[in-house]
Length: 194
Image (cartoon, rainbow, N blue to C red; front, side):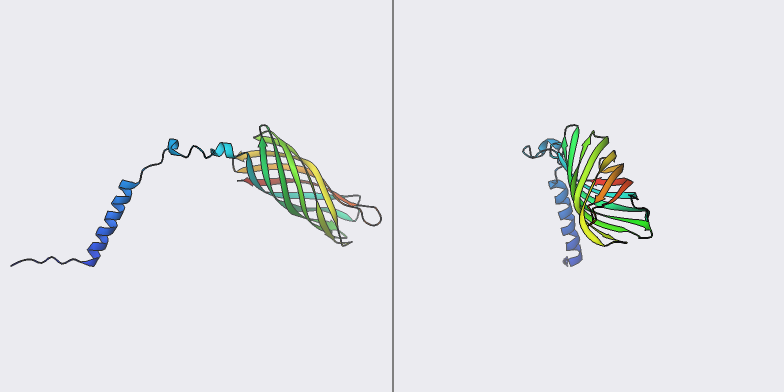
């Protein structure tokens, strides 16, 4: 009497998966650092520019406006930092919102373009300035050019995270009577560096 072996589909699937796993282990070769493409720049060489995504948190106080009290606000900035040995230049754009207490409850929305110039690598003092267009609501409602300028001090906590403080002077250009809405800001910022 002869024994007949039957071929079961379930066991054939197990065999196929086992062979595939074994083949992938045999064929896979670990990559070595000296095997990389020599024409491609290293990460260090290509990191002359990095993307900054920053969030500012501000305390603000209006100047020359007794009906307006202190307030708060912030900004979201996106820029490309260019490293030049010990200094860096960061062109950036963004938007901001500031709200003030008082009788008029002034709110300012703005979009801006500008930049930062910093010195150093781990601790970076910098100057910044922006020009843009803002819209104010409160005692008055109008849209006009805005600008700001100030100083900042950033600390690189990790290669991907910068933390800092800043102070700035902000102006919404003159009204019809020649007076301008002016306020200062003090605050903190956090940036993700990619």
